[in-house]
Image (tube, rainbow, N blue to C red; front, side):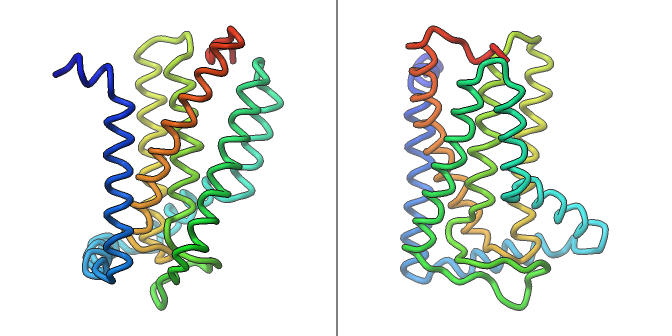
Length: 214
């Protein structure tokens, strides 16, 4: 079983991710997701207070358009391997376009009367969830292939994973997304990222370059 998982882990995660996303789409189209969203928000909102709100606003900022754009430009400029910077920027662009296209298709309105910040546009799937997982998930992949100790890899990758999850939770807490928006965004982004990383790996292999050339 372990050998099977190691060999087909990408296919397994992709399948699970798409299954979750399609299930949420089905529930959304049938208007059967409201109870779930309400329950999750009621749990998250129990920790509501000014210090927590400030923290979640900051976490949400870490996936804002300007922050992602600024970070991408810095990486593209500072990276020794310019191809990695290019693929990072392309990754974000594709993910944003995919998210905006899906939002127009589903046209789900955002939560009202509970939002602590003002956001425009549609709600499903969450753009912050999709982009944060694609963006920071790509960094996790790069770090996992860098020539550093396993301990440092584990620390950096764990911190980025926690950051990504926290960004998703922040969108629910701040009342600008339903829980189903966030989960759908994460699940679809995971499926997308697996495809993108596979293409990226093949490109880097073809060019005989390793992603640890940072």
